[in-house]
Length: 265
Image (cartoon, rainbow, N blue to C red; front, side):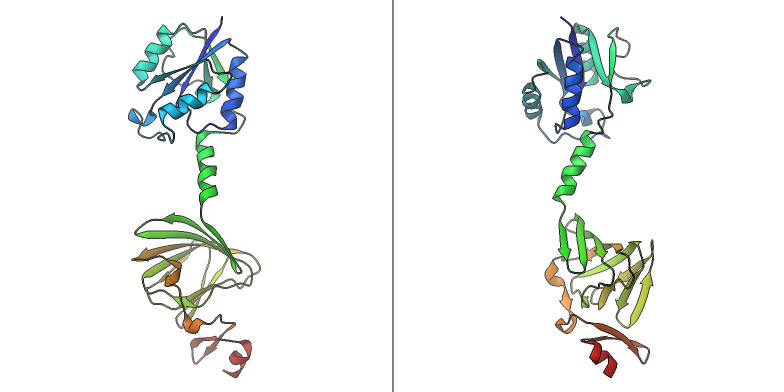
């Protein structure tokens, strides 16, 4: 009997784990998983598991390649389990090559697992988080909510070529727009402004404004909202108009209902 062992917290099972377990069972007849209850207890920089220890243990035991699961909390406990477990081979990810690890002084042969499958728990959690983000498609482009907290809301806004948002103001929030890519045209009260990559504009509570992409490539900017309320019903359209033209008259920017109205002005 060849007894193998691997240690870790095994949170959020993904295809990379399945491939690794299949590989491990080719080198041992019995595979034991040493399951860490919470790596953040000794290493606060680590990610706290999403699933409970019982949930992770049940998930591991459901795999045909896993024969036993033993819990541990501290690295000292891991060392004792490795020392007393009678293991013939230990499995580690190839990212541990030439690095120190718990039990590296024990005479247990090491097999390094190839991580070229491209999966990781961090990547898996990121994919899940991204799939849950609020993305709203609009005729002018789209916005994605990056953060929605009680005191701040952050959006990533994409304005398609030749498109613009409504001329509006807000009663309960101020905004800062920072351009990520492209050239953004901004109508702010009586001014027409231009901002490029890395440049910002501040829109105070009550300021009439609109974002406009007058170029032939998409414009992306980050909108940071601060104030007492961030609901979409705090978008106050100026005269409830979707304006079609902007003209300058007497050094003022005038927002017009139609092209014809602009020509009259």
